[in-house]
Length: 213
Length: 157
Image (cartoon, rainbow over all chains, first blue to last red; front, top):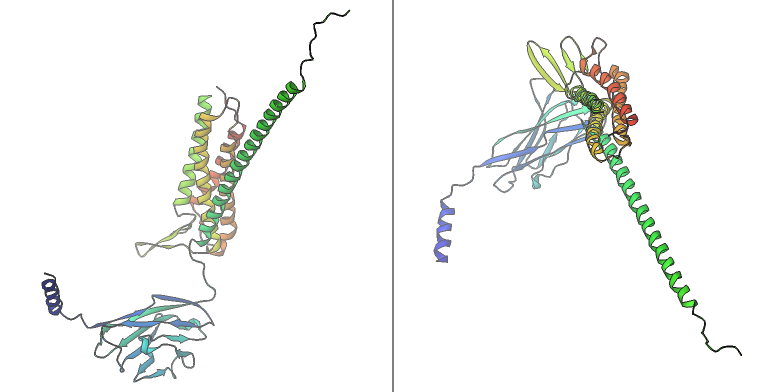
């Protein structure tokens, strides 16, 4: 019975068509960075095939508002080729590991003109059908505060303070009540003890009925 | 006595409604083409109505927080008023209710003051203050007066 089930499952698996040979490329959605600092644009891919020796990565850049994109990085045949004529000459560095399917680049010394869209395209022969992925770079003068951070923290702080005051108030009331209660109990207990001691001390004097001569 | 109580509750609820409208409707600044602040900037461009998120500066977030806190405290004051109405002894004062309502009015006041002083940083000079801003300023004395009346009021039979 078990062997039948095993055979049937093997047959089903054998007839299942091979997974679609499309390569899936992952980059971030948006990257925020301060002017003058550096930013790492990551790019990795998923492929059903083993990483081949002819794997290629290429990055292209399209400035904000422009229509054309220029190529700024290419990795092929095990050698990275960095932009040496375009807007990123001497500012681009390859920090990826193609063996681990990582084709990330590092942009140094950012300027405001670097705002734009960076597209990563990776190919893993024979897996070459895929859609390039884009990441948008935003360069700021100073890091903007996310909407709602200060709002939430002010509201949380005030409500927390209110809760703390209420808790302390009820705690004080409870403690004071307990102290009063224990004082009352000890007073009551002392009175009772004194009373019983007095009774012990006071023993009636021996009575004699002999008349005096 | 009942009439007085009803009047005070009506004043409180009116202040609360004004606070709600002032906070929810984004019309603290109005210009020819649209309104903006506290939450969204909506403008009429080329016949179409378009809304973006408001600027995420620190001051506008502080105003948002203060308005929301004032609503919370005013609602708490209303709830506490009904609690105290049934549990307070004769001759007692609605002290806690009044305190919460006065705190709520102080929050509205600080929010409106911060907006008045700081809005020129992100609002162009050609824009004027909108009706939400005016409602906030009207809600402040209403809340303050109702809070003071709560503190002075004594529960009679």
